[in-house]
Image 1 (cartoon, rainbow, N blue to C red):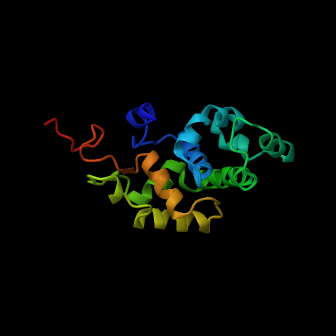
Image 2 (image 1 turned 45 degrees about the horizontal axis):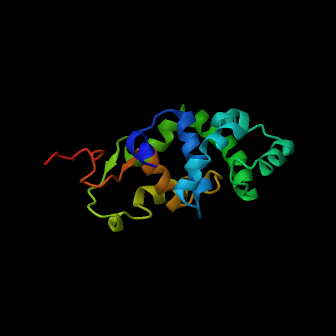
Length: 176
């Protein structure tokens, strides 16, 4: 968890494959702890072809059944079906915008939103930006993309920096 926090969480991501990975992992995380997902991350990578959306979009019923029987991932029927469906929609967004990156970063004006929290209770579950993202994604047919999941995705992919002001990863941190 510490390594993920220090090296990944909140770092701006502009690689489409990595963005898709975070979308998938945040969808599977709904209702579970992030620790559970991180411990199964390698299993997810192997099971879902390293999060290559073009491959996942072509998954057959045999692939779906293979995933249901793969104990290295969370075997939730709806989330597995949703991931396969979302992969195809992800490709549609790439065709429309050139990259998924261009699409997703529009919700923050192309910049990381830096919050200034000094306590965990201050961090919201949603924001106007995650509301807008969720609304647009749902309109496009994505599943498991409610505002709370979108907010978690935005945190993970660095669209929002929710590190505490006293954290070394906060841009305004000053060694005192």
